[in-house]
Length: 129
Image (tube, rainbow, N blue to C red; front, side, top):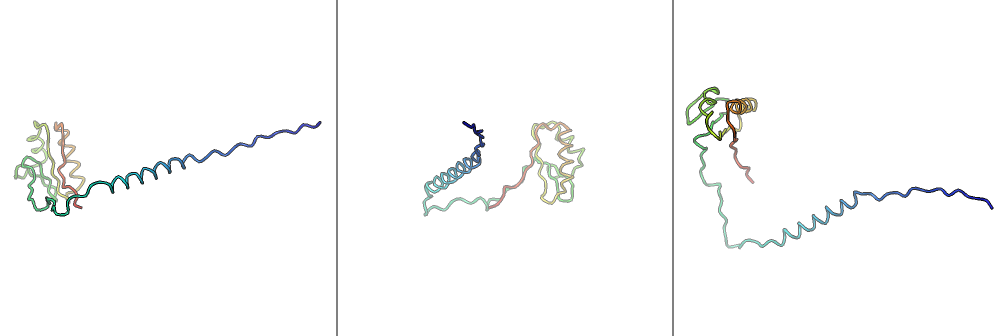
């Protein structure tokens, strides 16, 4: 009687990404259905629009203009003066112009932090849809 050697052929493992794709697909279907089941607002109601409201920057904010100059309470100030005047406040608001150089914005923010501002808030405009 002759003996034959039995060779074990390794089985190919199933692809683990298939299960992940199935879960993501089921979540997508769930959120599509859940989003379409949300009640629609009454068609006779006109929603409030905030685009017509005039807004003004906070009066206590340090304003950084496009040319790099600073204003505090409507008066032009230098960076060291602004840091000195805002040193005791718990929160300092920095309102940069959209066209202000980024390097000056970073320099101003770092100077305010070094000057003792525990919380620095950048005031921005919310994105329009």
